[in-house]
Image (cartoon, rainbow, N blue to C red; front, side, top):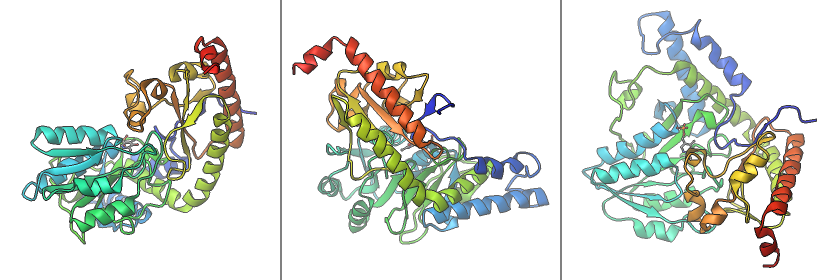
Length: 395
Ligand SMILES: *Cc1c(COP(=O)(O)O)cnc(C)c1O
């Protein structure tokens, strides 16, 4: 029996904190409340030690050195710091950045800002499967290119970019590579050295950690990457990001990374089998289509279009039972169809009839069965009352 309603199937938007993460964080709100920058007493040393441990946990998950981790307030800030920080620092070398048109708004809007400052940005299109074309990437590189910014995995369709191939191209042309990996880290193996990535953004709340904390990996050798700080002050985080460290949040991020490293492999097997069960059932319904690559994608995500049905109507139909999302949550305040789905070639109508399902650590098979039942019922109820149904049936 499914008792906790609505069932949360929107884990690409955010995840609940794992209880083990909460437990690790709790002492750092009161008994161990010290400022990690206080060098003169035990309160400060205790906080500093906890931050050091978290830095090691984060670094280990992505194959980095602890000294290469800069703590931030989340992936949005990490994206801003990577893009604007490289743009400012490498102004003497060039002003051109290459990215793609299905990046998160934190990347796209940072690029817009950089364009206002005199930077030039090339926005690569993606293919129908949601991946960039490597030949197009290489052709876009100019002598002034200082940075390639390609997300590791997409938040709406879950597709995984070919990072190793992308980094080989970046290396060949001596261009830095940044990747927004907020959706990938903790879900699939990410290794900054094997993948050849120079800067990488992480967010705790996408991997069962707390909201408002994240990190930016900044490579220290081969090559040593330098950044212009975007938040100035007390010189914390080697001067790259000032501000008193969010010690409980950082401890939570560290614990979340440790758990993902231990459990990711097994969890991915379980989640992908639940995802496939849900997806296969929904794709049996009339007029449903899978969006993005079936092959190159996160284990827990699926994005499906329901032709002639509006995603808003679908979600209203089962809002007491299921929590899912249409397009990205950041966009759901606006009536615009998802720019990610449009970039795949979907027309406005089909983009408006798409739902994203993100299965998570605490979902059960019973919940997935229940979800399949609820969605199936809602789809047939709406199709019955939909005047387009006859037209659709008659072609
Ligand atoms: C969630 C997300 C972000 C923003 O992360 P915050 O920590 O919420 O600022 C950036 N990029 C991607 C791909 C995301 O999924």
